[in-house]
Amino acid sequence: MNILIFGGTRFFGIYLVEKLLKNGHEVTIATRGLTKDQFGDRVKRLIVDRCDEKSLSAIFIDKEYDCIIDNICYTSNDVKRLLETAKCKRYILTSTMSVYPVSDFKMNMKEEDFDPLSHPLKWYERQDAPYDEIKRQAEAALFQIYSDFNAAAVRFPYVIGRGDYTKRLYFYVEHVLKQIPMDIDNLKEEMSFIQAEEAAEFLMWMAMGEEKGCFNAANEGTTTIEEILSLIEKKSGKKAVISKDGERAPYNGTPEYSINTKKAQTAGFQFSKLQDFLPDLLNFYIEKCLHFSDDGDILTKN
Image: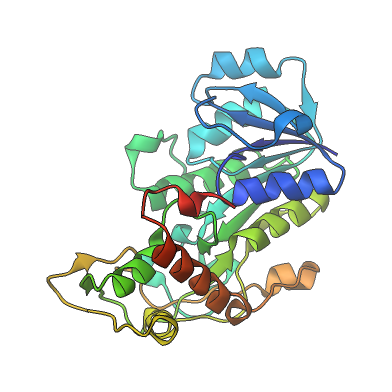
């Protein structure tokens, strides 16, 4: 297949490109040209400004793709500009658990808990509303205005892995090992996660298929910050310092929730168990924290 990827130069986008190449697909990555990639001559590249419709029209005038996987679509106007200019047989929008209102977070959240078809559509730019709302608008535009497209939206929870440039999970490891106080407001709340490599696997699987609509994607099982800290403490021999005067932890404010993935599993995708890889990932972070200075680069390398 001839596949175009927006957002293929960082984190799970890198895994996605590598998996597609390994499976014999022709891959083009669309970027602003600001981030170097590791793919050499194995991929084609387009330098694009997806906020400039005229530029997009000029770039895509003579191109067509079997599938576009869009990891960096934020809002309704992003959807509109791309689907009005680029020709593709299938479109996959990488969405987020954030489309579910935080006030409605609960265990076993299902796709129908947020219906993009009934959400009032507004043509937003990225600065026009908070992240959760602009992502809702992206889904609303896709399914209300471009309903004739062969399209799907994939809703991920927090994505974790070795190449995580956000360093959110690493925050807890570093603070335990360096004995830096943390302000944590959700120690015992259950949460869903997905491993970066499995997020990439699922996106590739969706690109190859014909499933339409919204799909939750997460590893089986949940964990808590308390359990994560316990794993770090057991491995490192150090005790977490939790204090209201400490640095605010990155997952703060997330209430208890889990994501139901039955729809994706019924369609044929089997997710691995969170606990099968989480301890190894934390061990990786611990080793990096112990043996490398925190220069911001070590965790961004796969």
